[in-house]
Length: 266
Image (cartoon, rainbow, N blue to C red; front, side):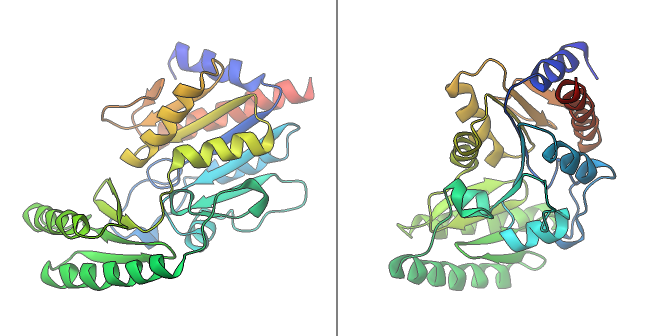
């Protein structure tokens, strides 16, 4: 780990009230072709649970996955006594603890719009072999990972063009995905809601995708000097620090866990 990142981790660990939040795919778990085979790297969930039991520390997994799938794949769907863990699914449209805020119940017009998007995206997937559709409570998602690039590009273009004709569709492109949501939810708003709810004086957030940039940008504009934002992998970013891989992100998380333990037991 670079010296500047280690120093930032040590400073963060001394916060009076700390929120430790992380994306799942591409951060806790390496990216895989089959989304349902994704699993967190060894030691990461144990580190998050250990952090959640420390005084003044709240843990959150913030993902584009729907809430049920996130809880199942991450292993954080069940919270033990003494653990402060919140799951945020569908980019903030679902929250495991209603006291946090966020979360959205669909109105009738939104439900109608979602059904229309589902029908149109189903047709696009049928016309582009190998692509897949994922259905969420407030969104439908095109998946193109592992698909020949010309087919993936054509399916992506068709999906974006289709969504442009739907006034209620919020388009969120990511790595080999295009999500069409009927609610305006994003990870930046989710992080702000979480930080406000738990009274965090400092926040850690790690993400790898385009959708995580909303969280990085929100945290940058909030101006807390003690926050630590971590971009995993390549690409332009508003995060303050970067690592190359989920394995490197796991190293940072373990270092934070050790440092936080020292500060909270001193």
